[in-house]
Image (tube, rainbow, N blue to C red; front, side, top):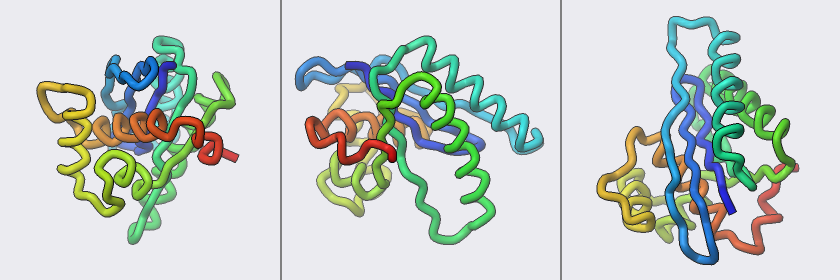
Length: 164
């Protein structure tokens, strides 16, 4: 099974591709789709849509897992990141109905074993679980990897996390 993990963002949208066979995971690739602040928002969203389509065409994931958005303060940021997430979900939905979502707390719990884990703890566990030489950078890509790992480790219970 090939799982794509997505950490939504307007400036940086983290993505990862993990191949899983039985209980063995192999990191295929990861990175970020990048847009720039001086670019009008509609063009940024168009760029993210094209980037998502390219990734999906290249890697042909069986299932796609998204990190849910969580914002405690900045409503403006929540709207723009929500738009970016919507574009990513639309691109994914054009390809498959096997779309899933996990909260940041669920991802932390699945990867570290503690729902309030710090970012560094998550990054270190991702590095260990996938036998990487270094912590994946940037943070958004590491978050996308953690999201894919969470989805894989959810196993048969994953249907409860399917997007509705």
